[in-house]
Length: 114
Image 1 (cartoon, helix red, strand yellow):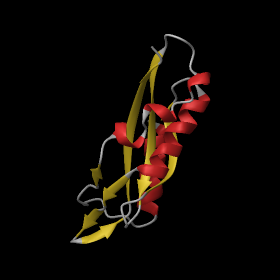
Image 2 (cartoon, one colour; image 1 turned 90 degrees about the horizontal axis):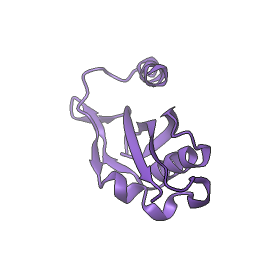
Image 3 (cartoon, rainbow, N blue to C red; image 1 turned 60 degrees about the vertical axis):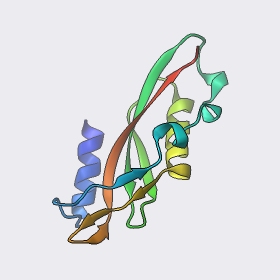
Image 4 (cartoon, rainbow, N blue to C red; image 1 turned 90 degrees about the vertical axis):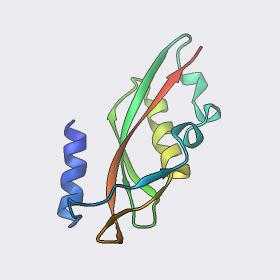
């Protein structure tokens, strides 16, 4: 929760208007973080969980500045989730008065090693 507030405060400090139209995802979390990207050797057998990340979306609709809000408990999985988001996620950018603006968003990636 503190990470989310910090991300929102950082965006507000940059002058991001509060009455923006949210960014819209192009694709799904499954496309951004395919099972092939999971650090299989780092996930204990028969375990499941999730990692929640907070990230920014720039005016072009590209994800950037990712940070973990709620860890999965497996550091390599947390890092892989942010790496996948930054590498693959694309959005229709948030807008304010018809112009693209910088925004923040939250995503959760679930995993199951079975």
